[in-house]
Length: 364
Image 1 (tube, one colour):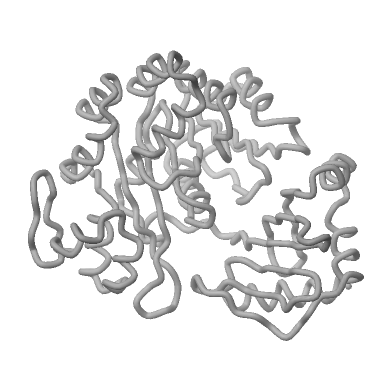
Image 2 (cartoon, rainbow, N blue to C red):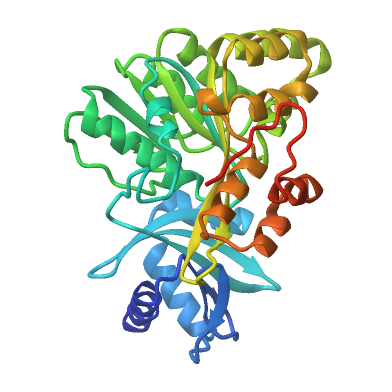
């Protein structure tokens, strides 16, 4: 059984699959360049049982999966690579979703990200939030930022992940990577104790609740740089998502704390390339300049988008501005850009050379 799993994973990696889906009594599917492609192998109950027996070895993981039916772990397949694995039940059967974690960390330029991302990574303190849906490349972008720090600065970096996705090698920085469930009991516990471990940079794999956000805020407030991710689709929605952790009376001091400690929000989506050979990141970037700070403090979040569109000279950009650059560069098609735009009508006007208000023209 282990040999069959090895072959499935190897075939997927060789085909450039980002994700591999294995479901009982259904063909294995690979996600390649954003599309699902099936293969001719159909795993049965015995195969899945053997695979799970091989992967789930920690007693706490066994108990968690038995009690909840969902488990996130990492798996290293010899001579193939590292995978982030979600194991779950579906109609009483077993399913696995495996994401291939590339061993080499690509830099900002290789990923097609704006150079300002490296400048953001150079911030000495504060909170940097990467937002987007599952599979939007948040973790890959964050890894590129940490690697930039690793190559250009001398820092103590602590990562708190569930599970560990990228393994960093110490270059100029000293890394400690802690996996929830193995090295620490929870994000909150690891964050609390991280402040006593003399870090310069703390990376939190995901901001999940009020407690984890408050711990991250405390870390930023005491002079640390915190990088984290959140499931939201735009910069302004990211702020609202954080405020949703709190009751209405609690939100004002949190907005004020964000206005002081937030450094940037990077919202990301992956768009199929025009050549069909992969995906390209469309990125909205909000920097906490004086205008953004004032809007956060005064609770005028509906105006953030206008400031983002008008802040191109500082390195900010909206999704439409990013999409327009990708279209003009021939990286993506107009059709895919329209599908992924928050405001396709505005994008159509921009493509005709019509820009209104604070919008800035981009020629590619």
